[in-house]
Length: 496
Image: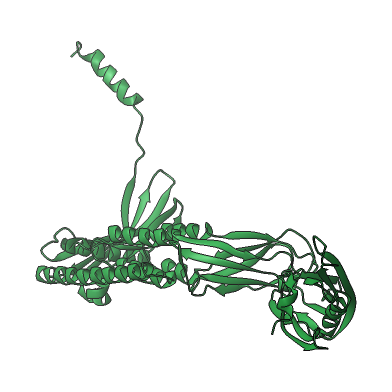
C-alpha cells in the first residue's frame, strides 16, 4: 500500500487540476400526465412520433407537428419545400431559429386532416440549469400519429404518378417556349418567358427530383433573358425639346423581339418624357421627349426592360433557390439597360433637296420660225432634318443659258437673267418630313427663259435653272435653300 501511495496522490492531484465541464441539468417542473406515456418509447409499424422543443407550448406543438410531417414524408420519399420563413424565439439564452416547411405531398393527400390522425400527445414543461444562478424554461412536445403501412404505400404510388404528370407538364411548357423563341422572323420573348415561369412554378411542386429540375428550368430562363439585346436604332439630337425622340431596337438572337415593355427615365436633365412603350413587330419602341426645363447638350435618357410581372411570379414561388434565381434574372435585365445622351438646345431648321425638275413645258409659236414658253412646271423634293417647321414665302430664280454668238465661234457663251418674286401660296414643310413641291407661281421662270430666247434667238444651246427658296422656321430663323437643275438642251425644252 505504501509502495502505491505516491501514484495515488499523483492521480488525485491530476483529477483535482483537470478542467471541470459545465453541468447542464434538465428537470421537469410540469407535465400533461403523471408519468411519461409508454408510447413515446414504443413506435413503428405505422406509428410516427414527432418531437418538438420551443420556449412556448404553442411553438413546441408546432415544432412537433413539423417533425411528425417530416418523418411521414421521408417514409414516402417526398422532398420538402422550405417557405424560407424563419421563426425566432427569444429568451435569456438569446434566440432560437426554426424554419417552417410546406409539405406538398401531404397537402395534396391528407395534410388538411392530419390532426385527426394524431392519436396521442404529451408535453413537459422543462427547466434547464446551466449554473447555480441561471435557469431557462422550455417546453417539449410529443405527438403520435397512426398511418397504416398500406396507406403509405398507396400515397407513395399516388405521389409518383402525380410527379410524372407534372414532369410532363413541364416538358410541354419547355417545348412551347422553344417553339416561340425559334420562330422565323419576329419573336415574342415574353410569351416564352411566361412558359418558362410556369415550368418553374410546376417544378417547385414536384415530389421527386425537385431541386435538379428547378435548377435546370431556371437556368434556361436566365439564359434566354441573356440572349436579348437592346440597342438605339435612331436618335435625334438636333431638335427642339418637344420633338426629340429616340427609337430603340430589341432583338433575340438577332431576330426582332416584339411585345417587350421598355421603361424610360431621365437620368440627367429635367423634363417630361414618355415613360414606357411596347416593342412592335419590328422590335422597335419609341421614347418621346415632351418638354424639357432647360436647354443643354448632355441630357441623358435610360431605357430598361420592364419584367415586373415575371419577377413577381418568380418571387412568389416558395423554394430556397428562388431568391438566387430572381437575383440572376434581375442582373440579366439590368445588364441590358441603355443610357443615351441627347441635346435640347434650339437648332435651326435644315432643309435638303435634290435637283429641280422642269416638265410639262407648254410653248407657242410667235411666228413661222420662233417659239416662246407659255408655262411650265418647276418641281423639287424637300426634306427637313432638325425637327422644325418651315414656311417659304418667296423665291429667287436665276436662268443661265449657253449660246453660240455666231457660226464661227468655237464654244458657247454664257448669259443669264434673274429675279426675286413672292409666293402667293406659301410652301410649308413639316418637321422631319419630306415633301414633293411644285412651284405655285412659275410665270417668272417662263418669262426669264423667253427673255434669253429673244436675246439669242439663233444660237441657243442649253439652259439651267437655280431656285433659291426664302422663308423662316418656327423659331424665327431665316432659312434659304438653293436648288439647281441639270442643264437642259434647247431642243428638249421646246420639243412637242
